[in-house]
Length: 57
Image (cartoon, rainbow, N blue to C red):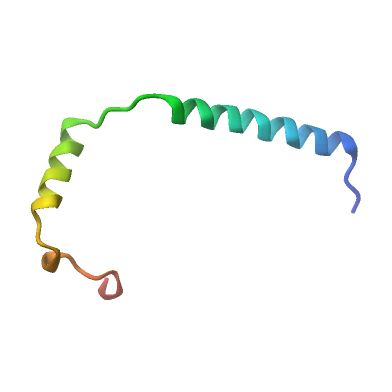
């Protein structure tokens, strides 16, 4: 199986577009919803001994 220069070029162009999109998404400022903030507050108050080990799931 041989890969042509054109195929490699197109794949690199596609990767470049994907990377630009990822950079754009990561550069945006996000704010958590109230539901997510509430879930985090509850999780922080929960003692670790109440959590279930993933090995037991």
